[in-house]
Length: 165
Ligand code: HEM
Image (cartoon, rainbow, N blue to C red; front, side, top):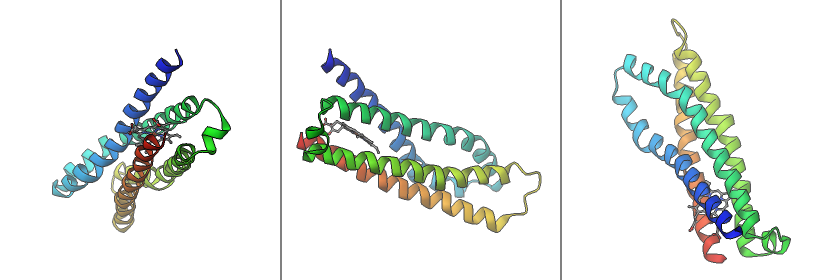
């Protein structure tokens, strides 16, 4: 029964992680390159439709990844402090948990905050904040690249932890 529970939680954890880091990867490697090719009105309309969804979807998948990951960590470590922080496996996963929480905070405070402000300007009847929009777009784009690299580091720790078990 415990094995089945761990199997289901592992599946949900990996599935959420694919959605979270996959969404970041798609945004950095596909959307970021397509957007500048669109005419300005089309670009604005696409962003106006995209941002409200993205700022709910990405944090939700992040929360699921972290929550299922933490449950899996406790289950596989049998709630035993020796395994949870007294082994290489446990320490790698603890480091991942801290890094993932920090990544979540970074995402909310930098990327999502910038995208909310961009949306606010896009919804203005006549926006005259060109330079501010330029700065926000740069923060939004660079923030996503940083978040993707950060996610890749956590993924590497996951693979190392699996090997260390
Ligand atoms: C960017 C965030 C994360 C990603 C992309 C991610 C991805 C993955 C993947 C792909 C695996 C399977 C690895 C393999 O079988 O080789 C895995 C396993 C696992 N993850 Fe995560 N994960 C993330 C965050 C977390 C967090 C925050 C925790 C909480 C401690 C966690 C706990 C675990 C555990 C316990 C396993 C099983 C390790 C084992 O079998 O020994 N993950 N993760």
